[in-house]
Length: 462
Image (cartoon, rainbow, N blue to C red):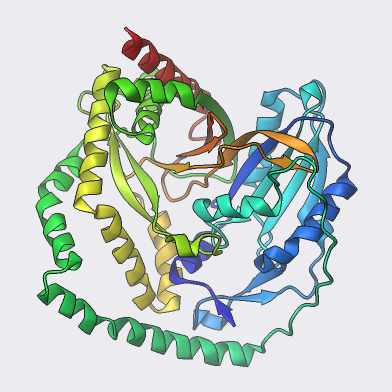
């Protein structure tokens, strides 16, 4: 029996009517659009490589154990692969509005936790795929590997023949409860058994001791960052509806800025995102001296041996986006300094250690704790900024070239805005997700991100 990890179970339990916890994407292709039947046949032929896509979640009574993955004996691919179209002229705004409505809708938790929409009618003969996958099933980095399920490196790739699938018998509720109780007892014991090795490493002055010193040494800096003032209008209750917009940048212009300023591509991207939030807050008259927008930046902890594994192996660091700073180069320098400090202090590794401590929690407390944490009012974080690297070579589906990919990252708790970032070929794309009522001006943020790149390119070219 395949049981969810503690982190995956947390994402599953967080979901409620206002917090759909799926990630998603909009993939835009050159035309002409394939038939709906061809798309269904493609999925039917490829699903054998991702068995989880035919499994549903089985929660245990009273949450005596973490939820299980079991085969869906009633799996019907036509439920998960759907078909729609946008009205003429099929402009970007119409596609974004459609995607926003679809992303706001929860997945059916009684079925396999994914769905795909074939969208026809885009201007220029283009078409799109809108995909949704629950966060408990996959994280962004694993999603890059799973693109091979749908996309191919060759334009003329043959369509494989579908393989007949027979669901396995589901375990009884009694078996699940017994196994859940056993897991609740043995998991803490398993983790505690690792403590002697940890103690030995501590005594030998190993990397754990080095990490402890780094954390203690960084406490004053961390406290100072957390003490910085944050805006009030980016936090608050969220409703069931979403606004979703996008922005674009070229990798060449980002590299041109980096050649002058140093740092990384990600530093430049975060600096442009900072400009976007600065414009948004200025338009709201909510910008103050010394103010920051604090972002959680997920970091993949997946080793090379784990690529393609369907689970969540992510950690996170906190970064202050210096929105009150008017100088674009000073904003970039501040972000670069923080990111260098975070890498040096190994806080990302520390965050992963803290995340893994959730394996000690009883599943019932995990369920309650996950929901409570996401509903508790707080001003610590204002956004999540997720940057997922993609392939640098063209991809195809059914012989049609993929031209653009835009990501969708969920919002939860009191964070009303998230920023997903994806790279493909020589383009960087941003998918900005926002609460419909709390952030009606989200387009200002998207336009500000684009203006941030223009500003950095102009400034560094002089």
